[in-house]
Image: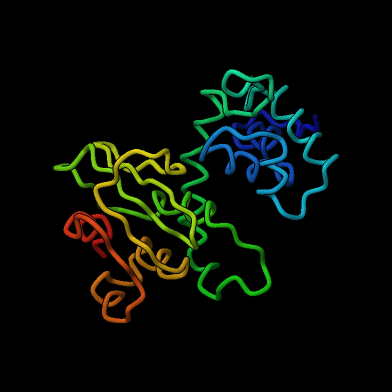
Length: 208
């Protein structure tokens, strides 16, 4: 492990997660534990040997752990409790990146789960009167669930539970709604958003 040789919290943190791809691996695991092949598919551009090296480094540092998936013998990677604490700084970086996202994706790769993870980071509304609500986010044909809790929002792939409402839109419109750059009324007027279920709940969550 390379060291900056500085007794500084930022320097020591970067020694663990500052290498290229490390935080993007954590990003993938913030949504759900994943197998090696899933991580490889979710990180377009990474070489197989580099992914193996990064996983080994993050495991030795205590950020991630290997475990058996379900009742089988297939290994999956998951964040440790300490590694899961990276959610807050990653969400802060996502909020900070908003001006960088305005030009659009250009030729860059895009996967719906990357946007799904950004939604809780961008939302500022707390729906305190509906702490158990679960909303579906249909992004590019991929369905995620956004849970509204007393402390904020949590997102994950849809696990089959009942949804109080579902919002379906192209990624750019979901991003605009979450960032407060687009109102739900304007999106509806453009025909850019479809809502099923409790529309009042959707309006409360995406209140600009």
